[in-house]
Image (tube, rainbow, N blue to C red):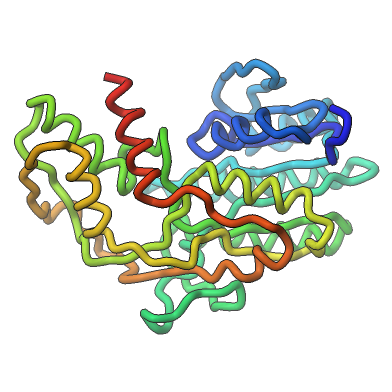
Length: 315
């Protein structure tokens, strides 16, 4: 497309919650890529998108896909986020990323690459009133957090050695239509919908005293594309993707319950309490705002309404 900064852009993890919204945003953009390529281990189809089923954890598969499409831009979203299998985290989050980056290095010219990390990399902030910026120590200790930190460090190392323009982002808690049902606040909304329909009698919750920094996934997509287009982003830069505003899980639960339109009983379920739970983490978005004109447009309450309406429409 005339006026696009990219002739061919690859989006990995395109069949997932985040990847689907990323494709939506790119397809709606006036300056969308001339050729938009979706890579995912799952099969898919989207109008206006070239789709390839590909396991990036297989070096030959990753190399073949990148050679075939020769992208000048890559947004790497593919990841494993939950589970108990340590090998699966390493394979999907570290090895797949390393394979993708190695394949990208073989191209001339080399593409611009954006690698999706996570605020989980920070772990527990030093002070509860602190807004965490990109210089904050990475103390994440869960399998997901550790794998994302290794992924990021390797990506930045490859970027320096190649050299190749690599950017890493650390998104905070994402929400929006299509959020997986096992994540807050989707887990609340799915249970509330079942209670309204008479399928269950009460909503089970874990610790609601924690506070998080929530960003709508559609705002995330806009920020990601803004970073990919910005000429102010230096190679090797790392950015938080966040609102800078805390929301307690209790506040979010109450807002979800209001959407039901009638009282729904709630009970704390001990099996939902985590052995390791960050009390509060809020990001500082100043660095991202210094290189783009991005600002979040969708409030967390609007996100909840959109999620509720999407969920009820499914039924």
